[in-house]
Length: 313
Image 1 (cartoon, rainbow, N blue to C red):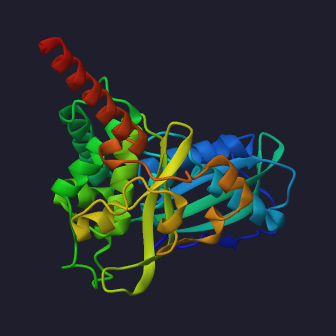
Image 2: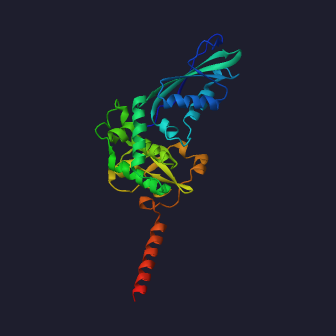
Image 3: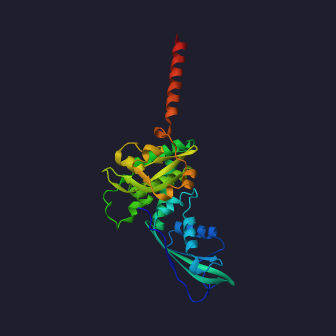
């Protein structure tokens, strides 16, 4: 399940109030500054974030600005704690706007009210655990494919699908990286968030994709997986399904036949997204070694063996 869509509640007062007395909101002059401020508040798991945006746009016309700032806050930055990690770890967001003045300038006071699947204390535990995992895997000197294989294998070995809480909609933690990395049990959203975070911590770019998947019972359901960059292209990887199946059927796969039972939602089907995140037309090999590399390595070993036989004669 993806986070609830942003709800905008426009609160319009009769006249613009002075903002000077309210120091709980951050004054921003651009939408980028506002997005950065909101992003930091979300990383800290703050339940309310106030932003005083200096603008001539009236509060009643600020709905688009509210949405654009929110989308900017969740934009992919390459930081393990931001981007898709935030997008899939918050539960809901409501926003309101009212006109204010700041030192005589027109402004809009934006208030974002948020809820999350985890809290600040649990996030601190994830920070520590993620660092321990990365250190334990000995990734220094590995290329991106090898790092991906090491992290993928770690998750398969240390996380199991949370069937016990699957039907319990009150238990939200199952959707988090905390559930995967600390409790060792999660649903697909938790697997994907953990994979995303660990890969970025290791310097491997990836994204979380939301869509529809076919589960082990052959039923269609909401599902998340990752696309991982190796070289110049991205590969589909579904850690959740592979953990359930006990095999690497969905590890570093091309668009087809992966897309036969994984249908991305519309936001990942645009020309812009497809251009920026080009999915490979061929699968990558097991443990991060391409099929061509497998063949090349085998040929090299054969040549070495042949040379040793010649030298022995």
